[in-house]
Image (cartoon, rainbow, N blue to C red; front, side, top):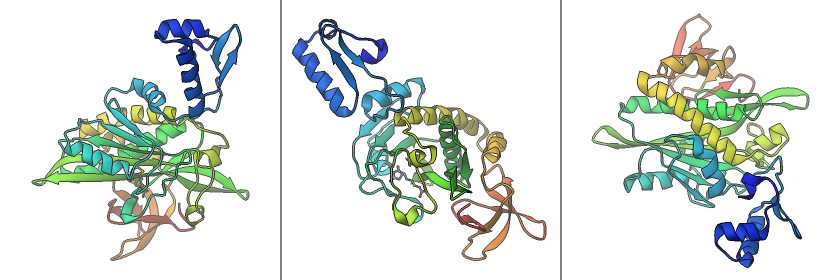
Length: 329
Ligand code: BTN
């Protein structure tokens, strides 16, 4: 009610509308303040929510209102202040019959999982850890493409914040930052897609997304390649709004992918956001590493790398990783 009105609401009015005592209203105001809301209380006028421009409060109510615009991705969500891994949570809910679009969001993970068996550092420091359940009817080989679709959605959602965000193939989202007068690209989001199979068919796909949002400090071991939106944009970002923007974009892109059963309709837009495009890359194929220039992707999401002898080689995600010649990008 305070948010909707933006003005002072008297304790009397609030207590009548809510059907509770004025003491109960006072107690609720106290709880909201504890959660981080700034509420002014003035004798004879009542209470007013001070709208802080850079406010960031992540709770069920804020997420619910940010996800009001989605039709299925995140309609059904669970918010946990803390969990082991949101991917694991969604897997468990999937086993219990949760519907497609179920979303788990956490403020901290004790066992955050990254790709290639790595750990995803998940402190309670203003970040977002979330996972979405899909129950697709396509073939297992199409599932990895969903990760590229998710990267497009994260990139689009982040761009609404005003920074220069790009995709590092296949699915890292990076932000252009200036460091010691030099431009570089640093990772602000990672995506881990996991699949549950049964009799050679996909049961569920879980898309896990980790966003470095308002984290004030980056662990030394990843500081060279990673940053947060707060550190890169120099302001606090509203996480609930970012979450809403990402899943709204995801629904649109996913619809196109599902109809086509590949990335053909999204290819141009993906390539427009691809930071590797036109850059020299080193393909870290364990059997045969090679170098070339990244040109784009094909409809299955493989990276097209032009080698010195002008041949295009398709590098499929999952098999190999790609690095820039001079560094991360
Ligand atoms: C990567 O290595 O780049 C992928 C990181 C994915 C991290 C997210 S955080 C939410 C979800 N739960 C997990 O345990 N991992 C993913």
